[in-house]
Image (cartoon, rainbow, N blue to C red; front, side, top):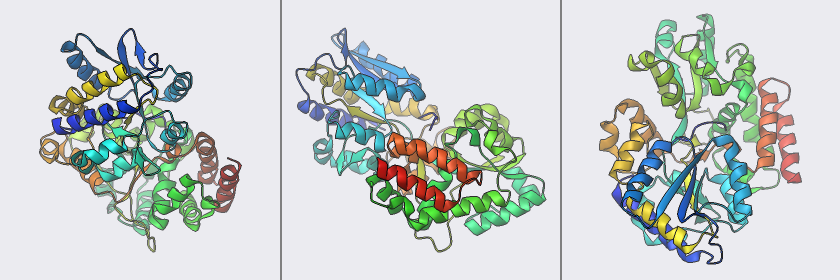
Length: 440
């Protein structure tokens, strides 16, 4: 997804210990990896720029013999740049990623160090991180990535003024949602806004519906490469319900031409032309708060979790979205680089100042015990909702395009668009994805 990836001292101490232990597995012959002119390089994507650089600056001021060099990259070109650098042995000591299939690629290539023994030695850290988030950095039962920024679950945003005027109740079930669609259309308002031109917003619908219908095991089998996993009835039914919603006029006219990256979909909600939007938590501060601050401050913006589906076996607390960004340690990084990185994380990352600065950006750390800080934050209602939603999640599914390998992710976007545009049946979607999976 082309979207922005936006803990206390105790957590920072443990995280520093994690990387220090990881340093024991490094290759001493790879000193060029992750160092440049004596600096320990950390690569991260945009979204937490100021917080990371501020932390590095504080650390560097008290460590004249070492330097943490935080380099920030835009999301879209980052993957290929990182892949090329790591493959050439010129990657950073520490790099950010999104877990899931991307992280597994590096694990399979033996390019990142396992942090499992460090986590086993520090159960207090493991127990503080939301289990559903830590799972995103876990591959084949071992931990290879540690979260460092905020959780971003996908939620339903809604215009409360539109709901009140149309006499519509916030939907708790899929049947409620379809009823609301009819009421909103009768009131002359588009039920849902969506940036279809960008394709990735479609993923949120199939992810939630598949989970609500069949539980997280359905997609877990797809990620694991189980034969015929894409043919699971839950996937077919999920796409059937998507087309049911499309045919009912559930989306704004011309939704396939709306660019999700320009804020057009959110604008339709805060101007009252659409009643709802299924979108990630990043849209709150990234678009709603900046594009319509009065709309947010006047409490006209509401939010809720995705509805349940009658007969479905999925846990209604399950969510999809961006778990967090994760830091991983290069297998080939030098001992010196790892020592610097470990000390920075020990003294500079996730201490009280880091947490405060991170939360000031609107991010919500996936760490237990921050209830008082959340309650005292400037957007307490919103932050509490995100915090509790992520903390209570029975399963936090990483966005499908990030969880899958590149070939399946590209095919997924192409074939799912056809489902939304009614150019392909639900069964044809599953057949096409099954063919791609088998070829891979």
